Image (tube, rainbow, N blue to C red; front, side, top):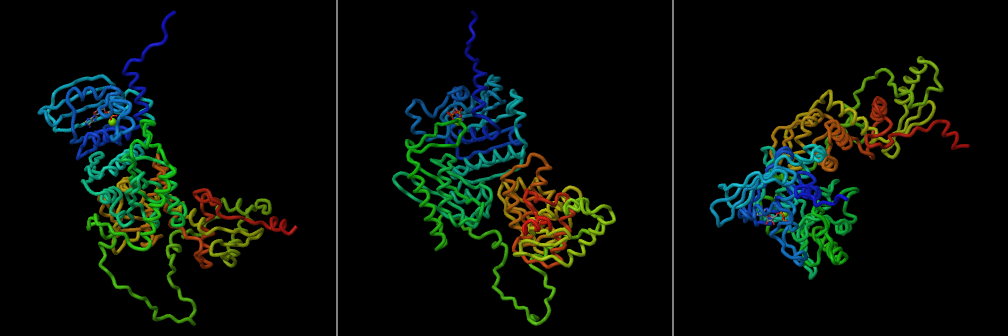
Length: 610
Ligand code: ADP
Ligand code: MG
């Protein structure tokens, strides 16, 4: 019989192994940067084109490699970092498996240039799908540069599986940030399609965090420090009031390696108990140092999980360290002597001259006069969203009121509609400043005011974005918003749509955006919060298409602009809300699928009395 079992050729074995190590361009970024860190680099530059689909290049000024090492580094299981089994239990480097370069070389075009300090001439090696196509001496600075082009060129299925550039870029930025946060003493740069996204000089930890998260983050950080025999904890946590809706700013490092650990995350969340608003997550940047024999990191090449000998003890120590820091922060402002003074004030306070507190007195106030037409705090509410004219009967009116059985002809239906208008304008009231209750011929309608407004604004904003840009109110004093790199990238994609909703922008840098116009419907004081929420929405859920992006945008803006429950409304405002709602395409549910009103018919009421 013919032999059926054969050893796979190397390049096939490498391709299979590559599937484990390299899932997307971000995996290449991670492996290359970690190698540079392991090689003792002081400066690491990352160049990316088309979210890594065309090029990922990492240039370092580390130890470099000799010709032989450079060639060997591309073989599978070739590593300088461990040599015997025992070494696995005391790993101090990021890499140790010796598979990354071999895997990447199996599925991309790789060009490596490297030189050690004690040689004058370096080496250049080109590999395409595991085949070395050239190896020549070259002039290059000490250190290593590895360029990875056309990732997955020989695995079309994988290549097609890649997500949009914005998704892939977000993964790359995530990996970049994790390594950069773990090594503030190394300088990092990242350039994407010619734009410098990060330029992080060597610094202390606090400065590094601020460099990555944006200058606004400085005021939000509280230091954490704890030393025990088992573990040393350092780092910063976010003040509770700045907790965000996304989990984007949660970082754990164990011995300078980024890890995820739900159990320890829980310890932190519990330490914040009672201090957080609903559905928000605290930021944290925590560095645990522990004897490397007490942890097991050798689980999977791309996994960020880690096992601890003594999870429970670490849980308690961590929790109490966080509580301690939060407690200190509550009684006394924290001092940080390492802090760079230029980070001292928030961006807002920087710009504005100090003001004396003033008290405003309404000198015309007369308690016996009829109520004046004061502008209300929710002035926005009265504008634009209720400018629907009295048009023909909307088609949905009919099903809403379930009139088809009662009404036979058009004539009567129109009457009913008009009748309803009359009825509404005389009889609606607010329950608990939350529900608007209106009687109509065959029952009572109870509508949640926030949800109704949410739906109305959503449809209006979508229309602004796609067909009919909204008017903008110009600001006398433009607002400067400071943003982190994630937000800037998101912002670039949303800019045009935001402009259609009435925002206008002037200057934009890598750190901030200047807003000089805002939609008619909102007030200046709301802008910060609305934009913040918007970005956390996009960090949670990255849209794949422009359409999806528009709906997320409209949804987030509408939700935050919509009138809150608990606000009292005049009767004509209530009327406008009801009328505008029933001109909406989908007036039954909010954009996030919650019921907007309930409709109690006389029949239902009769049943209750039965
Ligand atoms: P590992 O990092 O697990 O050892 P890699 O495949 O990532 O495996 O790298 C193989 C070897 O190549 C490393 O052990 C190291 O000796 C060498 N190497 C890789 N990248 C660099 C670099 N940027 N500078 C110096 N040496 C490097
Ligand atoms: Mg490596």
